[in-house]
Image (cartoon, rainbow, N blue to C red; front, side, top):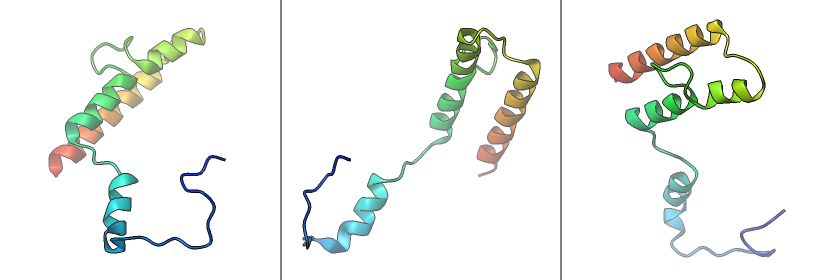
Amino acid sequence: AAAVLPPCDRLVLDEAHHIEDVATNYFSARVTRFAFARILNRLRHPRKSDKGLLPRLFTQLGNKLPDSCDELYRALHTRIEEILTAR
């Protein structure tokens, strides 16, 4: 496994009082409503059910995206919009 730091017995951190904030910023992500919608729309376009990563994957596998997936996606998209709008 690749390591960021070489093996050591002790590690001294200068400005260690910042480590929690730095680690939080590095290992987390802020997702805006628009960024989340963009990710969701990349999976399957909200109006063009044959566009997106999921339909393309099903096509490559030789299957058509089942109608139940369309309904599930619409319900998921609607619920996420409701949650994000309520905030």
